Length: 247
Image (tube, rainbow, N blue to C red; front, side, top):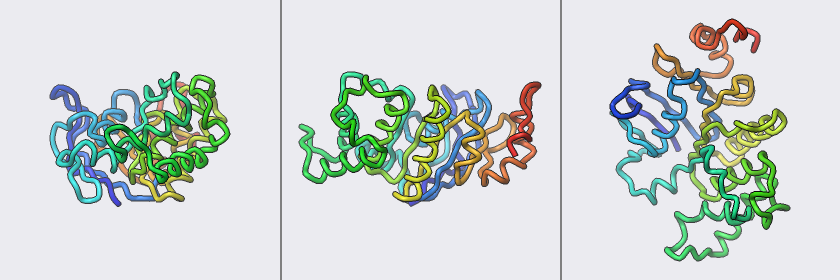
């Protein structure tokens, strides 16, 4: 399985944010999108998910152009966890995770035994089996994030895209989420791509990093090579922060 962007241009209302973007992501990889504000991390993520139109180019998942398949087919290939997806306070954890099965159930959302097994297995994978019948509004922020990840797992897609999955979490939960995502990528052979401002976590837990800057095409490389790239040093250097200290 491969997600591939071929010479895409992304932006809003014909305003270009990134152009000439060529990227490939394979299974069993956790990839972190990093860059300063305004470089298009969330825009690229949403574009890869077909949640907003690209201005030019093509995006393929497993050899199929994502804009040429039906929404239901796309939902079986790519699942998305956005920061606003956590707002599901009236639901139980089971209800939230079960939403991931919608692309596979009939119009009246009747679940098969297989659907039930997938939902429970997803809860177990994120260590929420003991909270399966708890209301979402009783969960901690870290548990809510794990529940949304479980929903994406229940959707059973080869590609999972997450926008700022560690935002609003304390440091222990941030680390836990990154460890979980890397384990799921490797164990479940998923392609997992996240946007993040957490440079230290991205560089220490990702298999690959995609660096977005304002002046150059997106750079895709290992964390070790990204850390040594002069563009990384230039992009994040400031009066109060020296990127070299992350080495």
